[in-house]
Image (cartoon, rainbow, N blue to C red; front, side):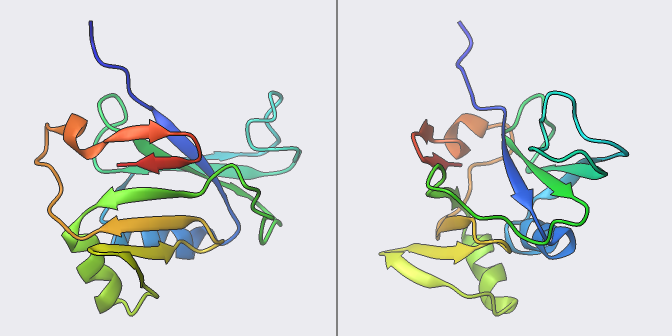
Length: 152
């Protein structure tokens, strides 16, 4: 039986350009696809909004074999009140820590070798300062999905 995995997590973003910069330049993910929608999703997949919106999928590899993040942007919405359903995502990557320092992105040491940072909009990320698993070893990168905290 094939191992189960989280497919993606949805983040509602108020500043699409800065958020994409965070995922690309700091975390080292790449844009996998981008879609624009002229009207709200009938299933309210973009939230309780009925206007123009977009979604951008970002990740370390193709969606069919890697965990990805969906960045949902509702035109005209500049920020969101974050609830308590997401405490943070842990990314294992010494390069992300180097990138954060190079970009002078705020980092706070949470524990030995683990740094806390925030994406634009306030979502927390914990950067574990060690090498990521090699391509094709996704099971090592996505450690486990825990209530309120996702580790990749």
